[in-house]
Image (cartoon, rainbow, N blue to C red):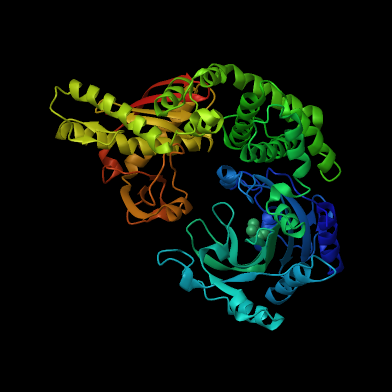
Length: 599
Ligand code: SER
């Protein structure tokens, strides 16, 4: 079955079962709590909590949706960017989904899932196993711990005839949502099917939205409980076409072929080809939906994809414009489903950004090509002088970087840190430092008190910067001495005096409110789920500390600022004193530096 046939079958299946077919919404959602559309349910989110599906006119079909709907939704997951290149992860993908808002529930939803996947007239696939929600599999301190075992789903699968060992119990992974800070969520049941290499792949996620989670992580029963399902078209095509990776499906083969045909020197390795194919699709769809490269939010996502693509393009075939060739194929394959894909527009936006980017890094890339051997020292120099990250050097260095490891690269980093530490020690008259975390340095008790105040102020400043300038602000570096804090972050222009004032006012308001500064140690994966900020360049251990600043007696959910951090900090924000930004300047394209003091 081709992927076009799968699309048709899916919509036909649900049309025959009384579902309204709703077209894909934009990748840029109306919902301000999320950056991009990550699932088919995004456009339907309000139907579970506020809107009446029977009376509300849906903007794209110009009539009410009714209680049951199905769609094929353009989706984009930034969380998977670093995994692109393996057999099943993508940034952009299409999600097949059926939805019910106060209509059918578990019985029908599971039956539909089973019939479509296993039914001889439909996909005709063998189900390897399914998963169901069991709170016993949820960690003790997790907010989902109190949700009851999904006994109903268990019995429905049994009734369908699935043997006991094919109904597996799982925890956090089979509880879905909410998207953003708050929204509908609930237990799920997932269907797994084997691919050509014998690996069981998650194909379909069937969510039973039973609860609404508010900003404070409180669960209340939903006004309109319902069903939200999601199945990645690319993964379904992989098992249906009986291949071992999504990149071998008809959705990707034409793209991979174009890359291979134009790769005259045969330098593109498999992972690079996959990344380029994925990113070309992601770039095209983001631009078509109105995203433009910038250092903020969706613009930053687009910029990251585009730059990674360009680096690969440049290093592997000089100036060969791979992108245009891929874009032709993308338009040919998707143009009839997604009319917004406009060749000239996408090509123009791509090339404007490419030209800008090339001017900045051309020097670094030339150096990378010229270097004979890319050992840790050479790699660190490329990073320090031209901003080429380890991954890029490793990936693009090819054979020259064969012996280069992240560990050695980091050792080089530490060596550099020791050198600057030696410099500080000298400054302190050789007395040695009583605190040196790399980021914080203090020579005596008095200085220690000062750097702690500046350290907490730095956390508050990062949060304030994100509130004033947007979520595209990310830490790029920081350094704290008893005199000042120095903080580097991503942003593409000078701050206005008003913005600087707003940031100062926000920090000083939290100082006035005398919030508590506390930390909790937890597994990295759990820490990531709290939404705590972390430094994307750093490598964190499996167990991390999350420092948070919260009103007296409150916890992480109510915190105003939260970050991965080793500490130490003051215990109350009142200790900080008055915070003032002393200087703001640009230090590289898209990177700003602030020096701030506490008085
Ligand atoms: N919202 C769920 C998911 O994204 C099911 O559609 O997996």
